Length: 524
Image 1 (cartoon, rainbow, N blue to C red):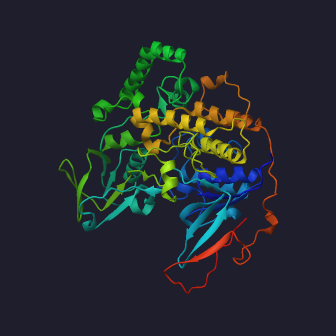
Image 2 (image 1 turned 90 degrees about the horizontal axis):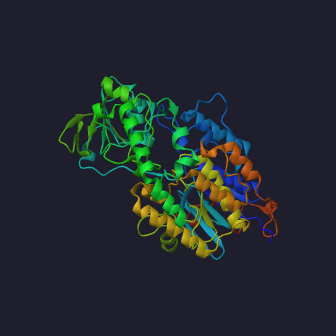
Image 3 (image 1 turned 135 degrees about the horizontal axis):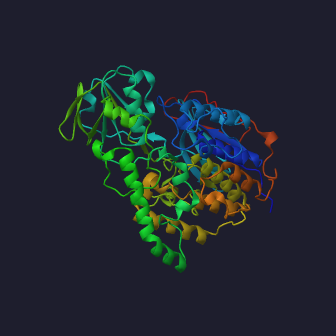
């Protein structure tokens, strides 16, 4: 059966939103991107100083668009922003975008989705055949509530709000042991004569970009590395026996890695040895070492402190250990709230997120209980751009009924429960609501490609090399082609007048019921 042309709402204009919009348009669907900020690019639109990707550029690119050769292996924030802007322009996505569009709710009405946007004087309802949620895992800043915060005379910022000016010449405390925390601490130390205090609750393993001179991507990203970690996929009896037999080798492998990192990074003399096993934390929260971080600690331009902020004073913070630190700027690099489900009615929300907080999505994309909707970018990884693109391709074909392995409801529920059971036993796998697929990049990519009907060549050099965008591009090209029909809607009939367009309706708000109702016209 030939699928019909759909009107698709893409919520979010970052990496995953661009991937989804491009994939749906490539198959002939009408797409409207809703972005709450004033431009495309997501978290890369505005970044803190000196930021760069943790992943090498070949893992942080779309399969049809490599980074320019002039871009370094770890692209800077400016490099990523320019890359995404060029990608949006190349695929004509800018004209399909509504900026400053805040989604108030998503509700099902029969076979359609009603998207309600907040407005200053009125709300606007629009109807769509399908919705792609592309808000990623970095959408609402998480800032702890701390006693005395209102009394503090200085600035309190989330890492997403940090600018050049907010660091220059300031007395700064940075809270958070993540990569963004160490990035900002080092960036601040280069812009102020005062020592920067870096506060973390616990020490974590940080991976150097080169381990004994070998690029980390050749050690941590190959397919062979994935067999060393217990996985959420069901194993055969033989597979369980093999895992039992190689368990001592796996243990030795990770202990050697811990020893090498400890010695290379001088963790013992710096008092930064973690209490966890690196094998237990290999996931999306395993950060890279910020360039210059250990050197800044040795120089005293960054001072490490353990604990949390217990309370604020007008010109200082007091840590849980009792230490008082004078400051005029506090930066919380404390992560993000997971809000991708906040748009939904309770019935849909409870189907998407379980009582344990884990997202219940087949292939990290769809719920068997919520039709006409999927997530793109919910498969957080060290290769986010690649995995977002593949999940977008998967979602388009799933909604069109064109997957070579179209799953049944029972198959989806069984897969979801297998994943959830594994994540409940592995704390690191619960990060981001269980939406991290690292370190199983190849296994996840293989599943998506096989579902698409792509021709795979599993016995190749990928066992010893990291994921390759060029190879994945060839696999995508081998998936069966299809086209949609215009039998349901004629794109030439698209209008922006409320009276003649049943898909757009203005809804008055209590702010000014008498205000003129000008519906937000679509851009296609």
